[in-house]
Image (cartoon, rainbow over all chains, first blue to last red; front, side, top):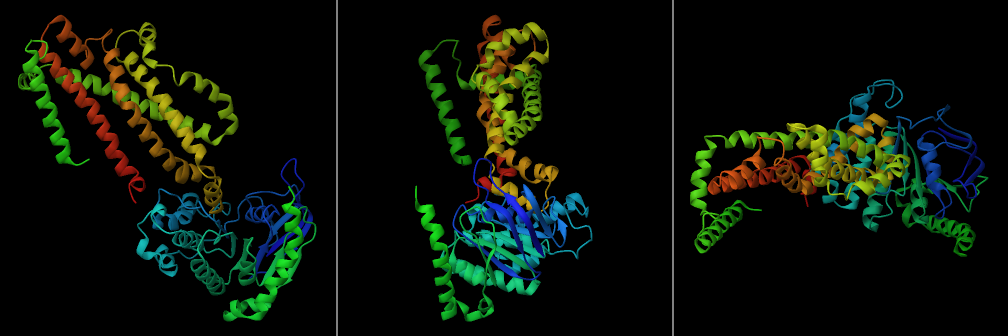
Length: 260
Length: 246
C-alpha cells in the first residue's frame, strides 16, 4: 500500500528527520507510528498524505508516486480540522461538496465515480445524528472527532491517516473511539496509519508498530503486535508486556531529549 | 436587545428632549412633537430625496469597499510575503483620519457623488482590509491542511474556507465603521453638493434658520446610521449563526 523509498526530509537548518529511510505497508494493515515529540512522526504522516514532499527519495501509494493529496486517503487530525462556521452535517458533507465542486477529475476526486455516499448514514454510524445541526463550538471533543471521522469516511477512503486523533479526549471517550475506529477499519477493510505519542494507544491500535526515535531516522524499527486483534487485548498480560517493552525502547530517546 | 427595551429607550430619550426644550425655551431647541410634525411634512417634500442621496452614497461606498478590500485582505492574509511588503504601508495609512482628505478629494473629483463615495470608501476600505487580512491569517494551518486532504485545491479552499471565514470579519468591520462613515458623510455633504442629508441639515440650520426642519434632518440622519447598524446586526445573525450559538 504505502512504500517509502530512501526518504530524506528535514526542516531547514535542523538535523534531517529522515535520512534514506525505507518503510513499506500492505493493504488492510493497521499501523501505529510511535515516538517522542520531535521524532518526525507527524511529518511522516503529512508526507504520506501528500501535503509535504520528500527532499530526496519517493513516497508511493499503490505504486504511484505522490504529487498531491490522494483522493482515497483520508486524514484526521487532533484538532481544528472542522470548519467552525459549518454545522456537523455540513462538515460531514464538506469532502463530498469539494468533490462535487471539481467533478471526478482524478486529481481532487477519484476519477472513477464511487457509489453515492449518504451523509445521514455516516452521521448515524458515528452516533452524531442527534447533533447534526449543531456547530463544532457547541459539541464535545469526542463528538468533534466523530464528526471528523464521519467526514473522512463519507469519501470512502481505502487508507485512513490519523494524527494523534484522540489525545485531547478523556480516557473513556478515547477508548470508545479507538474501538469504533478499529471496528470501522475492519468493516470497510481500510488500511490505517495512526500517529501517536501514547504507548498504550500504539499497542491497542497498531497490529504493527513503527517506532521512531531521535532524528535522523535511518531504519524502520517495526514491532509486530499480533495480539491487538483480540477484543480483550487491553486486559491481557501480553498487552502489558508490550507496553513495557515499548517504554524501555523509547526511554533512551526520551533521556536524550531531556537534556537542555 | 429586546424590542421592549428599545422602545423604552426611545421614549426616555424623547422625554429628555422634551424637558430640555422646556428648560431652554428657545427656537434653537424645538420640542420633539413639533420636530415630528415638521418631519412628516418634510417627508412629503424634499427630505426623501436628500435621504436617498445619502443612502446611495453610503451603500455604494460600502459595496465598493467590500468588493476591493475583502479580496485584497484574503490575499494578504494568505501570503506572508505580500503581507510583509504591504503591512508597513497599511500600518502608516490605517490610523490617518480619512476625513482630513475631504478637501483633497473634492479638489480632485469636484462636484457630485464621486468625492463623497470615495471618502467613505477610504474609511471602510482600510477597516475591512485589516480585519479580513487578520482573520485569513489566523486560520489554523491544521484546518487548511485537513480541508486540503479532502481534495480541496486553491479554488475550493477559497470557496469553502476563506470566503466564509472572511464574512464575520467584513461584518465586524462594517459594524465598527458605519458610525464613522455616516459622520464623515455629513462632513462631505457640506461641500459641493445640493443633495444629501448633510446639505439639508446645514441649509436649514445656517441659511434658512428653520430649526425644526434642521432637527428633522438630524433625526433622519440618525435613523440612517441606526438602520445601517441594525442591518449589519441582522446580516450577522443571518449569515454567521455559529457566532451566536452556544
